[in-house]
Length: 475
Image (tube, rainbow, N blue to C red; front, side, top):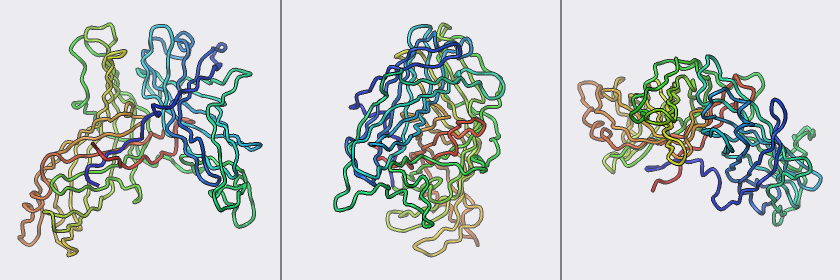
């Protein structure tokens, strides 16, 4: 697993030609014309009873700045938005509705002219019970918009915008030809939706099944955590260019939510890695307050535009289990406990237009403790206080799609593991052994944070979905 890196894929395949749909959007005081572009690779063919997985989707809504102005607070220079799409999947006389949830990390707003709100993300797969032609059509697009510089106390106001293809115009954007699976009899019921043993069919008898990313059990708490505690530490955030002063908001309550964060940690000396927050072993949730503090400077001020949003999070990780070949030949297994300090997540935007730079940083301090150590299968008593002699800094930078703490994405960085202390019992000093095997610089950390579930919002993307474990090889 050494040298592995995650990624959710590009927001849309470069070879896919966007489909442009003329639409009408409902505003507070009327309607407005807009254009919806859908860019997603839908397989041209599929087999009955087997999932058809559309690729990552990008949906862009283009409308005038004047039409958008009435939905947002005065002086809004940038927005963060989420898109919920109702996609009709139709085959002959059967149809189902797929819910696509996409996000936008943030869009700067021009003073006038057109605004392009670009949203991207993964979408659920669809299973068909019989062969035939299948059409994908957009029925409705609903946007939730929040001013990126909102500083009012409490949860920021959310503006809602709903758009549909103009009357008389089709929302069709893709077609799939489904064939029968060779050597099998076509069935009107997909394999993934078999009828229960008691004979009741219900929704399972539909010829088209849409697999959602997650489901919520009624009455359960999607974020069974306390809000995070601790102080923000923005020392590792991208700082503004020299110039005029920043407008720093008072500390806000922030928007409480939770998310999964999974990763890998490489140990350079051992040429191996261990899974962090293993998705197959009851992974822990990240507790986060998004937007606890903002720092901004306008585009016309000396030094130019700067916007930073700081969030704070807590993550109590479960123990990790790992086996390494110490010194290249000796199998050593151990459990590793993590002691993490508060996590600060800072997303900084510098400049406007083509020169704009966005940098996300997650920063915290961490200590390690080793226990249940075995050498070649034989237990080695390392004592109860075997761990790093001091805490060390973990600084992770957002990669590719990580442009907003609510949306998440991949992060990576390197850590310098300190020397070990407290290892050994009965007068046996094992500190040199673990220091020689583990300590030193150049240890890569790869993390993938999922989208934050916000229980207080009616469409808060709950429960939190499990992101992919880092798995693509680095160059």
